[in-house]
Image 1 (cartoon, rainbow, N blue to C red):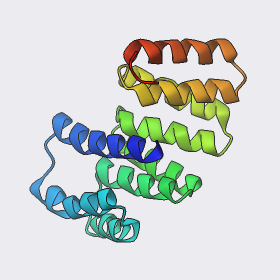
Image 2: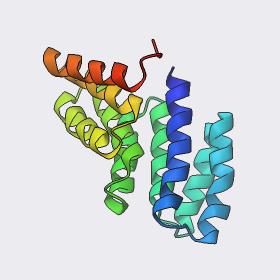
Image 3: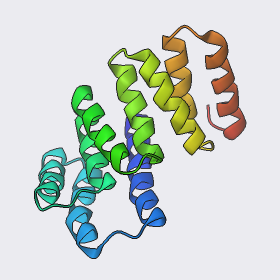
Length: 163
């Protein structure tokens, strides 16, 4: 399930940035190998590629986002929070980073911050089932059972065939 979420968000991240503003050619050539390494599960190579892009002056939300994904996959949620915040400083409406920032806050037990970020993620991506699911989990962790149930109901409405 985590891998399915990750792959969706990785693809969403890769497709959201170009749709909003076409990246410069140098960005694409710098990060494409990193995305390929990340998709194949080679976190070390992906991290080296994205870190190299930063050292070469490529400060783009996609670079910071993917470094956050790598940190999150390693269970380094404080580092993930830092990287997702850097992505959001450059592109505040980047839904995938909001979603994963909220998930890292949830993993850290910072439930109020998780709820806040996941609410924003749902506003940015209302049809994204993972945003609703993570928000339901954050409400549950905050013992807001009614809000959790409402999000789960909306999740079922989005995809009634999914168990």
